[in-house]
Length: 174
Image (cartoon, rainbow, N blue to C red):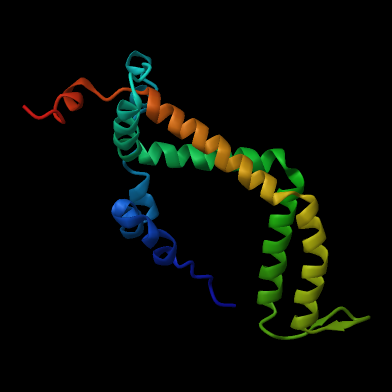
């Protein structure tokens, strides 16, 4: 069975140059620039923004500066959402295991002694079992919760965490 190729260029090309660094970096390098927790959760720098322009400025700065930390938050919320939705976790593991098992057959039939199944029948059986279970597991609700929880957490942090003093004055023109 061939590996699955995800066309990252097709997904991220609509967002311009913001995601070019994500496409060009390996995953290990992406998380190598994590900021320390003491800097990420610096309570001395939390303040209410004065106006919407300041919110935009803070969000733009913090999204690029803490991007790896925000990716870790997304991963942690994803794990939490799967651990609180056991049926969805079971369906994902079941589908992955089923596809792996069918792929290991290498196109040969599965002979159980009583019955013989070809790969088309195995894929159909896997689909018949997992589609109803998938609807019961409510993946759309989980994805929408994940988007909402990540958005509130990330944009809330980015909007209320003030820029460091040395960066706040570097943007102003004299």
